[in-house]
Length: 89
Image (cartoon, helix red, strand yellow):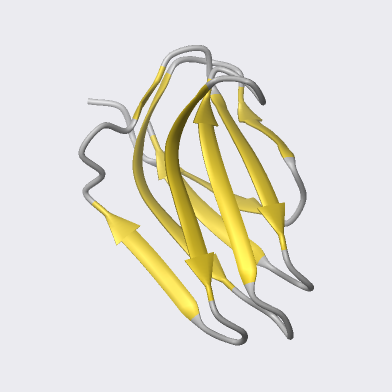
């Protein structure tokens, strides 16, 4: 079994371009509310999950029902000083 990979996201873009299985997502909001949209296969791909966090709060999603990401993982993040952590294999 492959080891988990942890990626920190602070700007919109590709996390990986390889097929992946998303295991968990954590979103930390800064001085404004934050939004994270994770898609499979690129910026126009299938939405895997959407996470919202209120100002200075943290939201974590574990054990995603369908975290399959053929073609890679793309993350769109918004919010002042927002930071997301994605764990995948």
